[in-house]
Image (cartoon, rainbow, N blue to C red; front, side, top):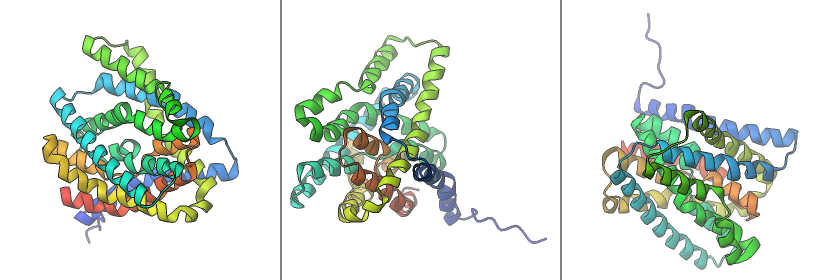
Length: 315
């Protein structure tokens, strides 16, 4: 008998498996939201409020309480994420000045450029690329991004509607910040809620991923016709997010002291597309949601190709 052809038996097959098992499901979930909005129009703000005020705090709380990484490893990720974000902020800020963007345009541009989709995109990608040991690293990254950078994302999303002072006030109204502080305090004290309390918190946190993807599909259904109008800015933010960010990550990696699997996870996550949460915040605070959702959509599509290159380079 002739041997059956296995399309995944080569290195190219490995990349095909990533596309079929990781990237394609994400796009299909987005497509469900897209089709649903076309057939039965819904208000996306209701979904965004559920995600921001219920699901994300649950994800942050459970992740802090259950992570098994050492303090030194977490510190390395904190330093890497801080340096990466700081350098990317300087580059994006300079780019916005050169392009003479207005305040609203700059806010949405920063929101699309600085924050990567390390959660519902990066976690499964790390799982397939590096195995289960990479999952804890990816979860910690998402946790740090949510707990430490969430305030910056909210600031940029909210400042156009309520001004800088109002934006800062909005930051401290976000429950994710307080759940992060509460979980960190409980972890330091060595206490935790009973299992029957943690289980529903965990399940609600997991629900954030599909809800965020459906919400993105709903918003894209409303804005697909307008992507062309923002094509230039979307291309610019996608270039910074997918090409410049991993190069900056590679440059600052030695300074963060990350090695082995930690270094691979950090580099891979630095190359992921614009965060779905950026679209959620843009919808919630009306921070040019059409542009931000377009950036999420286009950078996600483009990442099929850029992540293939990154994965080949880091092995």
